[in-house]
Image 1 (cartoon, rainbow, N blue to C red):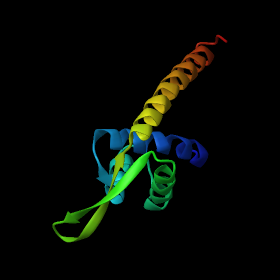
Image 2 (cartoon, rainbow, N blue to C red; image 1 turned 90 degrees about the vertical axis):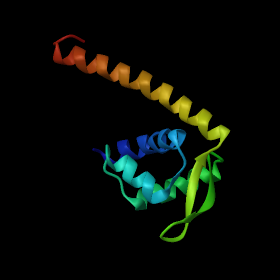
Image 3 (cartoon, rainbow, N blue to C red; image 1 turned 180 degrees about the vertical axis):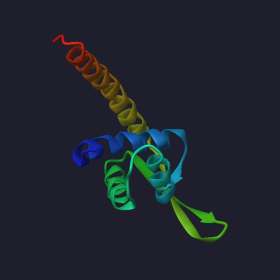
Image 4 (cartoon, one colour; image 1 turned 45 degrees about the vertical axis):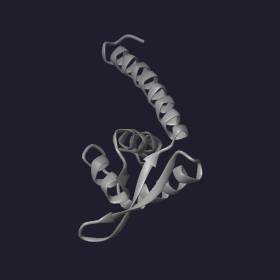
Length: 108
């Protein structure tokens, strides 16, 4: 997948995962990587930006087998941003699907 396209969608993916439950960074990478190839080097800068924009908050939680982990959770603002991005994505995806179906059927 094109890198620029993927970067544009990752914010929505992170917000969608965090809407389901709080996660630590590596856990987010693993969850998203099940569907889209992504690295920690991409997710952590995104998480820092989302935190700066007040879309997520971070807190430390003790771990059973090591140091405390930094978990991320959505703020109200992040919830709203994620919902907006999802609506925009659904509209965009529907329009692109219609365009592609028209092209493959020989119609414009």
